[in-house]
Image (tube, rainbow, N blue to C red; front, side, top):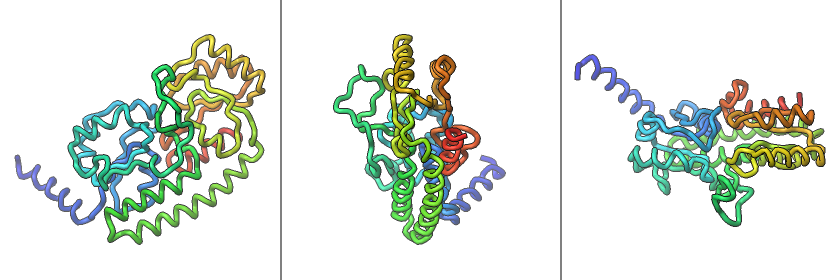
Length: 296
């Protein structure tokens, strides 16, 4: 290798060694943003999945393997949300530090309460998650819980900076609670309103703020609606006087648009993660944007 290529490589290695940054890989944008807020300049964060993609179906890239190979810590959503794409990347990265069960592996679903845990699992029920609904990030009350778990793991891996991480988490918690009061006030008039979702991705949010979930456009999780099911949803919307149809950014909007126009029900496309829409560029603005779109 030429000297001109070796020197920059050595400088990069020296910089990493001197900064002492923890190398953190997060599967989704919301995780990466929380890690960055707690770790600040003491961590280097890489996010694997794009926020506007279907979180269940991420196409693995060779670059993911390289990123994971260098990681000190891998933080996943869990609840089997990554089951279709992450295990093979972990295997190919061959990094013993970030294997399940090791200190460098953090499954956030283990720190929250999951809803909709099925009593049985069968392909006839669609893409059911056996551990429960994995979209717990959509309940803003879970953000401080997630942040605490991340703070504790960063502190465990980097005890010299424990006070730094804890102080940043305390700051994040205080700011989050102030925002929660604003969000709750804005959504008070909507408590009890009946809504239809395309996919059960907003259940935690809807339950938290008192909406009533009347049904889903998907007949089963991950299964596109049939003509018959759409006809049944039409009847349900009219019977239950549904006010909103909530649509994610990554599933087809044909059925939602049809129902919205036919029955004069407001269709709202909502972000589900950091980067899902341009306005949702951090964990705070995800909820700001959801609530802005509902209340405007």
